[in-house]
Length: 162
Image 1 (tube, rainbow, N blue to C red):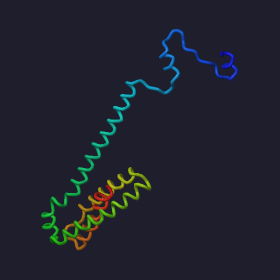
Image 2: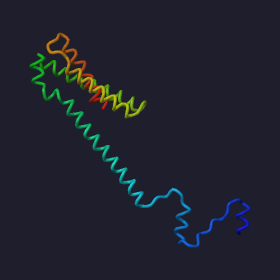
Image 3: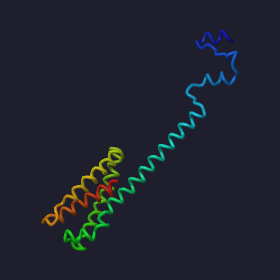
Image 4: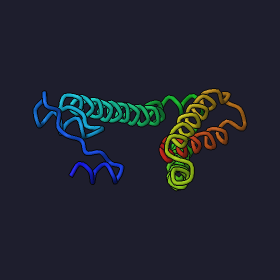
């Protein structure tokens, strides 16, 4: 009864006389949204998902395109730098060997500090390594050692970390 509801401190809410029963039920539920608002949010979420997937595909293509640069120019590189085929094979092997350590390091770092930091570190490390690789002087006594070290860094960051 009305008296019991007032004593407990919770006044009973009665349906408004001018609206329909569904309006009254809808006014009691808080935090609900209309179907068009819900569909709009779902559409925005799908757009975010496809945008991220598209960017990841572009980055993946770019990463492998950029790490295959040595394979494309290997004849010119061996001729200009005076590097033998055996030395070039060692260079490639060092890059793949370093990439194995990059994968282990990236997994541990992702767990520890998060993926965003690791991706930024990989991009930065790859960019710096590639620029330094291009600046190694031609014909210097330390050139091949510098090439091997920097190619290992490229393998570590580009193939392993990313």
